[in-house]
Image (cartoon, rainbow, N blue to C red; front, side):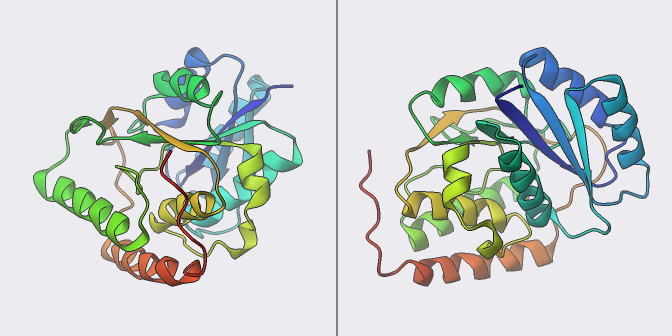
Length: 242
């Protein structure tokens, strides 16, 4: 059985899932892929089922309604832990995360527990974003770092690799975030628990097709979550920078 699982949440991603699967398995043939589909009206879930019937490395977890990014990842993480995967990735379906970077994450995982793909190490590595989106992202990263003390250049990014020990140590039922603040909450929790976290540089490309899930409600949720995180672990000292 594979030790590597790439968890990909989907909602109306029928245009992308064949291509992203081919790219993931080309970059890392020993990996498995798990699509967590939020009952997509465009038939993404049915297409993923057909792909799974053709290739045993492809799996599908169907959710009954659209519950958001965080709930999809939590369901995927629990599925992975039940099946004893050792390395569990987060990745978007829209090619904003390049599957060819997977071996880089696995190499870093030899000496780390959580690997964060960073768009901002030694410069900005983002393709096709409008200036206002870049300013929002950079401002959010600064806000998170100032309020939480986390030393990471890109705490809001969604391309990650967890060793299973990290996910086993986190009470996944207590993770409340559901939008992009989910990324912040998971990293902050792992950091406060003392796990070894490193960043690897990635190139982030805006989605090739489909529509972005970003909206004002997601931004408001993230702002509020960062404030709550500041006080949730206030009695625990910040881990030493390694």
